[in-house]
Length: 319
Image (cartoon, rainbow, N blue to C red; front, side):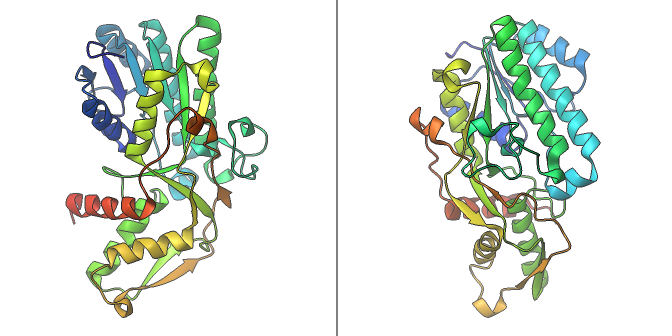
């Protein structure tokens, strides 16, 4: 990659896409191709092909996706599988047809079996049943990996895939019911603080273990691999995580402490667990040893990231 290359970031307004734009700009890549969803619906095959034919990007970061938490995935599985299959197929095929030098596909750790051996290595893919609450989304993400591998095999392309753990960061979607757990916790505790609520009700029982990664760290990993490694050298797809896990109960306590940092302990709300709601996968820790051996490691500690994310939420809160 050099300064003259055209670099397309699909999904640049989202959590990961915006982090990628920051990373690329920081590294002095200025020839960025960006299009909002209103300008280009990547589910539309003809529109996607026309965009690639007109712009002919040299490098493509595929960070566009329809995403959500347990609630959203459970309520709209058809939307999650159809949207993400369409986006993956359209972008990957258009990148090939327009002659892109390299493509990096952003996946998800939910591709791995619900009861995979921990920490989860890349070899665990398709070795057992998926978590039912998000299997539609997971299947679309698995298909994207397989598309990249198939295009590499048949056409000699350089399409590689990153499988990040649970992500959070600047420009997140703080959806209280349909969003991912960490940003949803931030919004729920801030709501409680503003109205003086004495308790906050959360899904499940708090026991699941999760790993979290700051979005700018995954962006740094994506750029690092795109600049230095081929798909064959990373094994087709590669895990990217922080290497640290925490229970949802402990995470909730950390978020509560950040949101109520200026309040006495006795004014902090009690946490109520709604055990009628699903927990999801009991444990999900990625084995990131492969990317660590290639020279990359996460740098943002969870406590630091939660504070930064809460600041971002306050800055963008509209009501």
